[in-house]
Length: 180
Image (tube, rainbow, N blue to C red; front, side):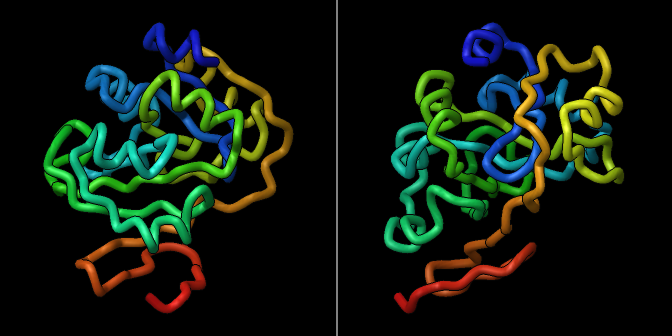
């Protein structure tokens, strides 16, 4: 998988949550190609998978909310943070949803490839693929590689928006938080 990604290929893989379309997040052409393949609204940002909290500052120039992020990551929580860099990712919103996946093999790949853009493996408005066969039905030859991870029985990641340092809005799913 790593070699494909480093050679600017787009794939469908089972993340720690569901099957996703993935590609190099910092490569504008790759990101635009994923939007086209999926038929995704161009104003709707996608999640960026990162290998660790330190990627926020090292790659994206974001001062992370470390105590609460350690509560979420690695895990199934995507956190929306302010970010003015990489407009091809934030689509003019100046925010990006980040996630450190809870899958050791994927984190090791992320350490070598850098951040990956990720979106559910389905055409816009359709149900996410739960098998690699369903993903192939959606995308056929539009996707460069497919990796079969078995049947996905999980839900998409929980989506949390950090409105400011003291206010969190849960946009999708449910999450339990400790008091900070």
